[in-house]
Image 1 (tube, helix red, strand yellow):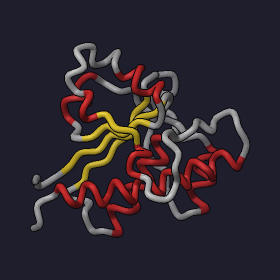
Image 2 (tube, rainbow, N blue to C red; image 1 turned 135 degrees about the horizontal axis):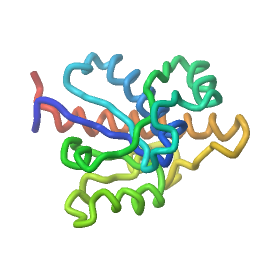
Image 3 (cartoon, one colour; image 1 turned 180 degrees about the vertical axis):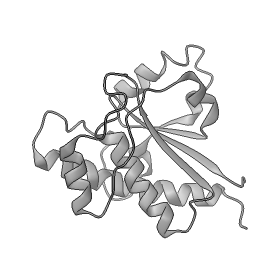
Image 4 (cartoon, helix red, strand yellow; image 1 turned 90 degrees about the vertical axis):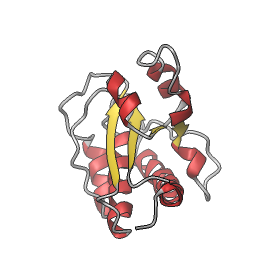
Length: 162
């Protein structure tokens, strides 16, 4: 049990899946009145989009569901692996890329697929919607909502009651 919990959502460029996951989770955490106990961030394994807002198509799709995606893209840092309690990845490529930041693989146990927390959808990975159409962004949000709801239940079970 712990007093607080730190979550990092990771995808490739930090402009579609991970900032959307961050936005969905922030929304759920606020509804649960746990903002002071659950810290949420997102990052990409690559730094190509550092400083950019989330992709406009993802921002639009998220906004229609009531999520505000305000984070700015950043690249994962080695210190993130130490600092965060759980690192939620979207796909197997993210896991392989993260290992460049953790060559000794001492943080492997913290790295989990977000879809592990899904209770409705059977998918194992959150697909990258970047090169697809509108439906791809909707599908990603469906998976993120499911996964983040399960993740919140998991984190709540780990937090001390106060």
